[in-house]
Image (tube, rainbow, N blue to C red; front, side, top):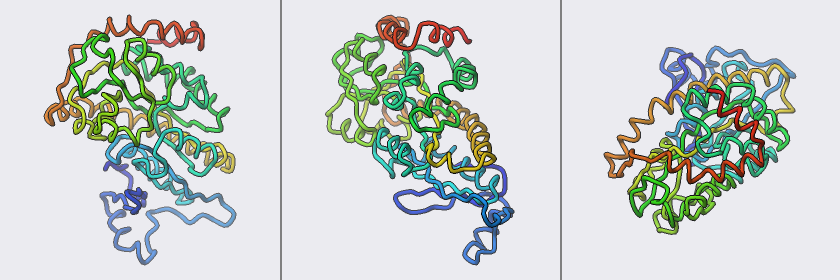
Length: 355
């Protein structure tokens, strides 16, 4: 696990129902471990006075603990605890512990039964359609283009718009460029994907993109995917390399095609119900911390991507890098046209041109 360089009280991460304390290297961290049971260590934080806002927040994700979402969530939790002088504490629940599917977790965030959610924006289109503009195939050219859009006015407008769905979106984190895996054959061009049953998120743009190349998209909760692949209920799935690696998809899939057909952002969301109970100064602290950690989380994933591809190959996956992206883009062009009718050609052009 990765930690902030600051000496603060460890955050908590719940793994399989057991709370594990993420320890920091340093004198204060060691002292906390020795004295924690005696209640003698505060990690430099002052106790909150009477009447001050306090909260124990649950942060949920679907990805395994090793995924960058959860490594970054641990850092976010530590920084929030430090910056609130211990008044606000965040416990991270990875690997679908609080819900097995994206929709389930998002509905829980709407209702306020979980406080914070981090995950792909893909399923959020079912709650607020405007975010779906980011799911258009081949919308982004590279990571520099991504950062310019998501950290600029377009990205901020999309974050703000999620309040209509009872979400307070603090920052765009990153899922990454999506790639195809399958157990049937090597896939280089769109014709190779014809007839494959491919798991997708519950996302109309993603499903339409696969239908355009002749594949059969199967929307499915992420918690069900590994077994479905293992039992050959579906032929393949599509996800960023970090997810494929963390979920050990190599154990149930033979072929990895680096199609990079869609860039998939992630977003850190606070339940609007919880957000509205917080003082303005704490809201601003959470917002700034989420954006600071977003840069860390994106860099973490990007730096690891090539290494993860190499490790997947070492574990037996046949990696296809020779992808005919021009053919893929052409095959998915009808979806881009449909998206223009839904989201507005001017808005799409603004993203395409902001390089």
